[in-house]
Every structure is written in structure tokens, then in C-alpha cells.
Length: 128
Image 1 (cartoon, helix red, strand yellow):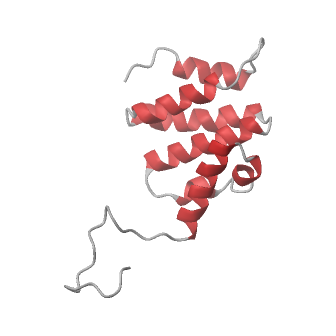
Image 2 (cartoon, helix red, strand yellow; image 1 turned 45 degrees about the vertical axis):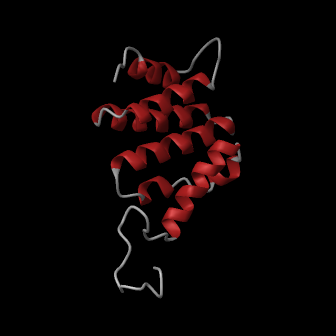
């Protein structure tokens, strides 16, 4: 909170919000996924459930999935990514679906596992 406000009122929500430990952990996971720091994403496996909004939680799941993929845990990555994708489809969120597409593009193999094939089936033909 800002101290010394001239009118004594709190600033409106979009500009200032509570930045607690769960928010710090969520930002750490997101940064770790973008920077390829698997230790940051794998140590915070339970962090995605800390966020209150389904869309934010789905984006966090995608970040953790990217961390699993970077660490070589393909099954865990696409299982978690599939959960996030389901939320994205439920809310018709193009941002979540595009994050899922990005996750899938970052992995290539000649013989995809069952989790990857299921993820591909969910993602196939999605137009938002």
C-alpha cells in the first residue's frame, strides 16, 4: 500500500494489488519457464493451485508443463498441459490455447507417447 497519499484513498485495483508469497512463487515459475530454469519450475509443482482464477491457473499449468518438458519429463508435461488446455477450451481462451500450441511446437519426436497423442487430439481443430 502507498503511504502518504494526499487524499487518503487507496489506489484502484488494476494498478496496485497484494503481492504475497503465492504471487511471488507464481512469477518465479513463469520466469523459470521462460528462461528454461527447470529448478524454478520443478520445485514449485504445487504453486498453480495457489492462484484463484481458472485462467491464471491454466497459464501457470502451461508454465509448469514447459518446465517439465525442459527437464525431460514428457509425460508430466503433456498431462499437465492437457489439463490447462481443457480449461482454455472451457473458457474459450485463445491465450491458453496458443500457449498449448507453443508447448507442443517445442517438442518433436518421431514416435509420440500416449500423453502427447492425447494432447494433440485435444488441440487438433481448435479455432477460437
